[in-house]
Image (cartoon, one colour):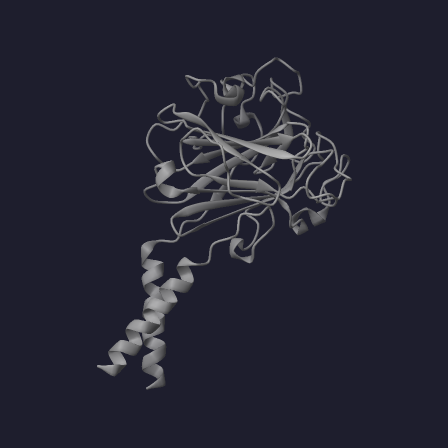
Amino acid sequence: MRNLKLIAAAVAATLSAAASAAPAVNGAYDVDYGSASAVQQNATGFGDNNDPSPLTANGSELDAAYGTVSGGRLYIFLAGNLESNFNKLDVFIASGAAGGQNQLGTIPNNQGGFNNMAGLTFDTGFNATNWISMTGGGGPTQIFVDSANLTTGAANFSGQTVPGVGVLTGGNGGPTIEATWNDSNITGVTSSTAPNDAAAVLTGMEFSIALSDIGYTSGNILVSAFINGQNHDYASNQWLGALPAGTGNLGGNGAGVFTGNLAGVNLNNFAGDQFFVVAVPEPASIGMLGLCAVLGLRRKR
């Protein structure tokens, strides 16, 4: 009986440790993310930040993308900078839920100017189910987050925060999202080169959202993220997954022209996948952790 209690305690401790391996949403890389899922291939067309303050930035870039799932939540970390001039970071999630959009439509309340992105076409196989957008600026710096469920059309102002603090306040409903930035990066890509140290950037923009809020049921999760203009109407060349090396800003027509919307941007016209994959552990893998704990105890007997 005593051995059974020891085994049960070991299994419980192992599962608890696995469940607690969640990143802190503070705008800094956490080892629980593991290695990068995508790395930038392009010099930034939205300015290279040279301001080391964690609060503000004078340029925008996406250096590398990371994702993990823990405790029933999806965590996304995007190394780089978001200029504190109210440019937008648009993050689209494809959870696999029915009703995802390969070509963006409009949403009834046009939350945050979302409808300027209507017509944007993702890579074949990427069907966006959810949208999270971050923007910020002012003095002192404030960060604002919008979100939408693209399968239902429900959209909300998710709340606001300050750099380094992931808890949002003042939202008007919708899912409980964590989000913030640390804008101190001054390395990574520049305005003329995409150097090899892009994957070494350890600060940037970070989010989390419950799997239940994205309609997740099974399989891996896909994420497409990019820097956009202040009105969601001029796409940069900073995408993750990355656009082919040497690609300039996409603008509204895919070739850098401002059209007032993104209807002319079709990611199928660019080589590679402009999304990255977040692997979701199968329940069986958690069971294996417990089994390993049991086997370990048996070997010690």
